Structures are given as C-alpha cells and as structure tokens.
Image (cartoon, rainbow, N blue to C red; front, side, top):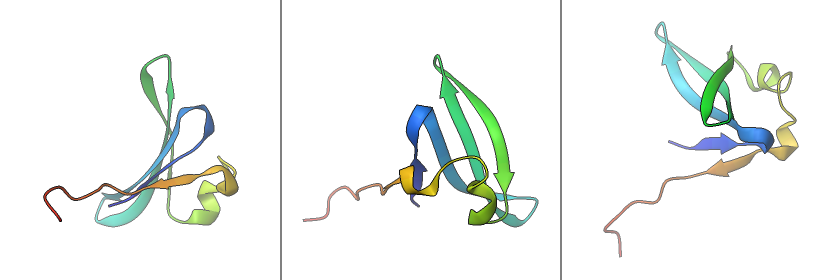
Length: 65
C-alpha cells in the first residue's frame, strides 16, 4: 500500500482504526515520530499539510522480472 511523504518529515499512511479506514498523519522531528492527526478524509488531511506538496511512495515488488 502506498504512503505519502511531505515536507518537514510529514508522513501520511492509510490505516484501519476501530474497523474504519483512516489516514494517519505523523511528523518526524529529530528522529522521533509525532502523531499529528487521524483523518477520515483527504479534506481533513489538507488542514494539516498542503496536498500539492505530497509525494506518493509505492513499494516495489521484489523478484518481478
């Protein structure tokens, strides 16, 4: 599953919280990761970070030729 990275150590991950899909927004500062918010929608994520600054990171599958 993809994650999104933003400026200043922002990381957005899709998760399941209490049987509901959420987007977890965290920020890494001095090697420590801090929870910013659990968001139910992209609109809520936009309150914490500019969406245009996000970069999607997709994990590559190994062993695929």
